[in-house]
Length: 453
Image (cartoon, rainbow, N blue to C red; front, side):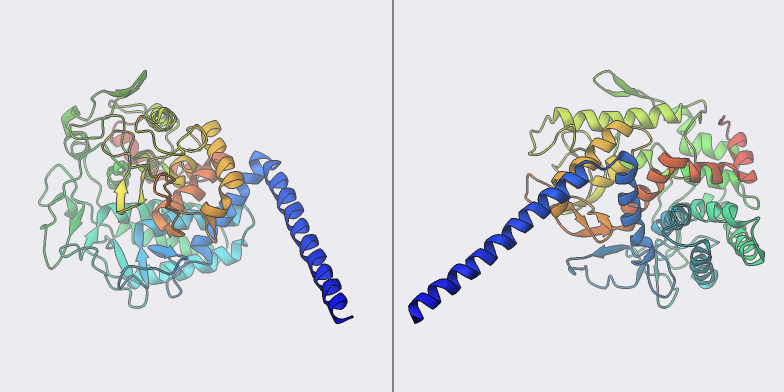
């Protein structure tokens, strides 16, 4: 009897296990079918909302600003805690505005967060108006980015300012508290001394200055790369504006910027000696254009909508052609930009030297306005087919390599921010409208010889 009872009990538990496994399989199939049937709009909303959480729930606690990085595998570099990314926080400010528009949070919740951010920035270390690359969330003091980089970072400050000007425009005609916020942002903006960063009146802008090391970093900013917004913001400044010569001689190097590079039949018109031969990493076509609208944006050097679209298409085609024969590259799995890499951090680009077999989801996602069909195909493929490896608390992870079997569950502010911002620009053009509505922006672009729509 005991033996018969044992056999019956084993059979019973086997049936239970079979039923459970069967239910799990059915549930997984149902979930996969449901995700595959998502409309483009629904899929993008899922990605936008999940990625937005990096800047909302994942924000630094004291300032409300963006963490430099979040590793959900809990493996961090030394002394990385409480590190604010100032540039990433500019992207994050736009992400919070998108959260209000999409009803992920209320307008009042967004206002309270922005009040916290502005209060922190008002007391944070600044160097002739510019914030450093990193700030300590607990002290509001500079956190050195490198041995000589412990002062103002004008490029990161401009990434922050483009986001803040969008916030100013969004709230400036609101209630008393909202108008007060807009006034506070305006004061921070007016304090940035772009003239100082000409390093003695030279016709070029310098990236860094330190009260300890002076101009030791010695980094005059020449184009073409991700820094166009630096010169636009400097020309737009209502208090310390630069003349057009700084743009023409510094950024454009007296027209030398206007050189041809190409991949197959696709031609780029902004190229300097030493640049990647088929266009740089895709953040070049993204960071400066999160708020600066490239539609109809032209000067004597380029048509920026055409340039950015071509750069994105070349990046896509390179991955489809896959000349280095990396595992996984396809029309649904593409995107090369600066991101985490198998060994450290790298500026991945479509050429034999800089393509390391690492796909960065932010590259394709943040190209959505330029390559909607190609970007949507990649997003859908990753979400439907690779979600278990690539999807986490704050959306798609920063980078992965099928070649190396490498799928780190890690995020960077400067990569998550453009995803939210460019998805929203694709939906509504929200940030392009806000930024281009600024009176100073219209004046500054005109001064530099731009035409815009």
